[in-house]
Image 1: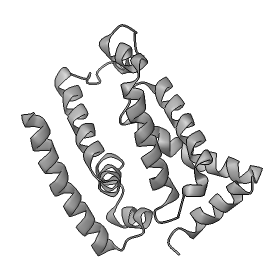
Image 2: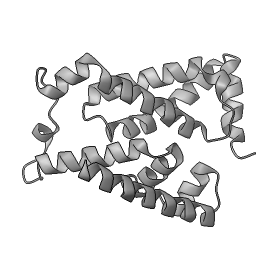
Image 3: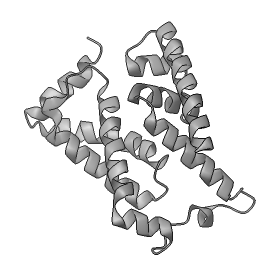
Length: 186
């Protein structure tokens, strides 16, 4: 059973075990926050998005089948929450400058590079491409190139062996490259 621990935790949550909820929240909040922060540059908004993700996940736990790791399933819900947030009037106002965001550049220490328009645009294209990939491809690439996980660690997270993980990463890179070119041309 690839995701037996996740399934057991979900069963405990469905039985309304209070310790299970604490375990679920503690194990996933930080990881989901980092996942969200690579897509949404507003920490306060990330916190809200992650909390909403966890609330929705708890209400939909009965749909978790254990075919993927619980965190992978949560990332899918979080992606949808992020997309919903970007479609919201508040996000559009925040991005247009009508509301002042918490500026990450202001928190940089002297001597650190500041974000340029070009690096922001590149980051946006990366996120757009990742968001168009199948979830397993996107997660594998993020874990490899953003979080620095080894192929073996990614394989464990996806329930795959090393060779299958290397193959999945190769397919994901090819698909990402194709999307990158299409987005850059568009």
